[in-house]
Length: 217
Image (cartoon, rainbow, N blue to C red; front, side, top):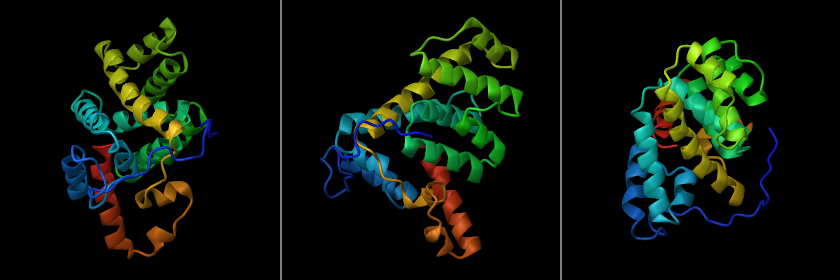
């Protein structure tokens, strides 16, 4: 996946609870309590409390929708791939593989823009990517393929929430590239962090962290 970011410089530095604006601190404390750490994306959003609050609120609403956890992650991954966002593509590749046991070939197909061996997910990804690529426009046949795969027409509207969510984080990553978190070491090719853990305890901890991340990112 190519990175079309126009800058490699960090415009916004990741903040901690101690360095964040006062309005952002309670939200960062809640994130840290939930995960045991603050993901870099949230740490960067903390520079603007309004954006941090809005992103967390939109994510919470999207999570309550009609798509399954796997479908939600695939929507977020497809949008992130189409928008060339390294950070979010790593997040939404790792979570469905590790936490939701999504077949590796499904994730690889989304990443590589090849047909997905699951008809329903293939229709979902095709519509998401077309909407992102065409700035909100979709061909009638793409929508009909989505509906024919078993989705309802009101879900066309609902997946726009996921696209909106990733538009915020993907565009921020373009403007100010977000470093990968240690929890995503496997997606960045650096496995040293994972290898330092005992296998059983490490995988349990890793899964718990990713489970909480899936509700935030």
